Amino acid sequence: MSDATLHDTHQDPGDFAVQVADQIESFLVAVTEVAKGDEPGSAIPFLLLEVSQLLLAGGRLGAHEDFVPVERYEPDTGPEPDMDDLRERFAVLLDPADVYSEVFDPYVPRSEPVPHRISDDLADIIADLRHGMVHYRAGRVSEALWWWQFSYFNTWGPTASAALRALQSLLTHIRTESPLEELNGLDTDA
Image (cartoon, rainbow, N blue to C red; front, side):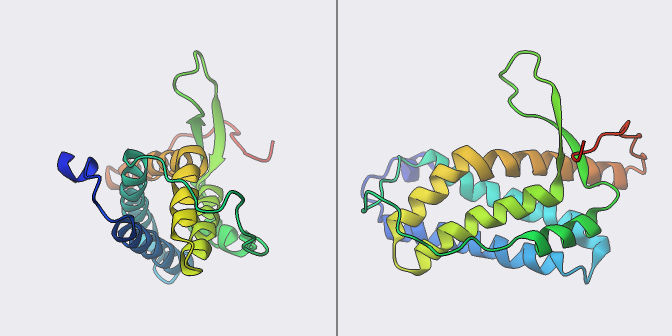
């Protein structure tokens, strides 16, 4: 994206919304297909690609001026979807390398690494994106853009960044045939 695009005050937010929604929908469809487990050998490279592409959409949302929803209060989108089945399918696909270590905030001095699960990360990202997609499909474009931008900064953006680093590291270990060291009991259930 050129600098001219970033600062174009005449750009139609609807066009931007369509582009972002397409990127998000593409991610949702692709990772849901990966979770089916039909091709477990390609799951990690595909997830790496999809999370990378999603972060491009997030970067575009982050670079854009703040979106302001039309309505003061968020309209009810109904019950939150149950993500347990999807989360479990990712966990099976990624076993035994689902758990990884992440520094929550690199700007906090002496932050301790925290255990995470890629499967949890992906399920949480999908839930956030689907929430915005409900608004988008209901024609509440400004609400969808606000939600995606807000949750990019606060939830799915940091989560996707952490998952991307974990997936990239995991793929590096696989491709360079360097075994993962013991995680020394690292477990998110502790």
